[in-house]
Image (cartoon, rainbow over the protein chains, first blue to last red):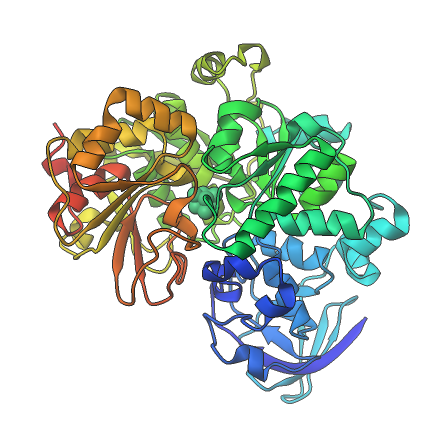
Length: 165
Length: 418
Ligand code: SF4
């Protein structure tokens, strides 16, 4: 799978409270509405600026905090196709895979806002077209890649009726 | 090669030997969602045409984050869970019954089991020697319907904690110390195991604090070997027959081992907006506060209320401070009533609210105003956590919180503890 898009850059420790704030708890049963607030507490205008196909590059421990699957879901609804970060919090990482949103661990220090990237999910190779550089992300384990390729765990289960390790 | 607690429990549940990094499908014993994550689980099952549960008595739906509900959207979310319980026979824990993690250890979880919950602090039950871990709504939905989950077997960090804690130092201070030391991502993807004299001398209630906060270091589980204390706890809850010895092999393979001298730890406070931003109380002393919150799945148990009540007895909250106390469960509430703690709190000027999450997650009750400062016994202090990104959340033990409520500023509880 090859993804191409423009980067929005975030810092370290973006929590699920930044992405889907607790005060919007009542919108959790209305994901399209909640998505209008995606990442609001990190960048109040993000939901307005983001375009389908865009990519997020974060720092370390992206997605720390709560187990709310709503967080990767609304990032996906906002049109973002992939998140790169130095590291991810465990539950967020797992939820992103399950909802079919690719997440790659890579040192994002050389990636800047607005950079144009081309990402190969199978090899973990990331071409920074703006800077003409290449980075290598840690590879997604094969089972998790399969879930992403199936379009998320829901589609995976629909397809196989069970977990297909 | 010997095995860690996590490896042993997972191996038992997938029927084969495992090592860190393996991805396996494991049988689940207890699965749960709460009112913030559960409606999505139910909707997912409906979408997949799989609205059923394989193990209704051990499938639990908690109405605790917004309880009682403050607005119609959340009341409607509660209806989704009530209907699902009616349809499938899953157990519904109604508003006022308490916070999911407290209810799970009181009533549902036993040593050696696998517990998955759509809530990050599901790791709390690890103190009972269960592999308990937080996941997303869809993961837990699938556990409801299929009775299993996919898991990556975690490597383990072992924390050997020895020494007698000083006066005014509780398991909360020790775990804040550990998180401050290794960082909020220091144990990401790992299991943490807590052992040593300090841990075995802890009550069950204090042990839950270690496990509860292991996710604040990024961990997948926070495990404590079982012993007589675990056994007595289970017996007191009518589950003595469920006791099992759970411990790691002597030659188990740990990714890292940390030795901690608990006698050297001071009361600690975690400063906004990160849990690992810990400072000794001496460096936070004197910070003016607007609100004190004693409660949550971290420190809302009887032991916590007892410490707080002993400090607040015959005293009044500082006029600037709103004091909020929330027992973690109905049972804790009832016992606190019997012990006279609730009377002490009310006399001290506290608002005692219905058992549940209370102000912890900013859904209702005690949201902060712009620029306001709270000292809370909860587990995390992220920006926006208590309903307002313009608020400032400090974390401490119940003793520090109670004494600070009287003084109107962050204060060292050792000044009053005898
Ligand atoms: S008390 Fe706080 S941390 Fe615990 S389950 Fe409730 S919201 Fe989460």
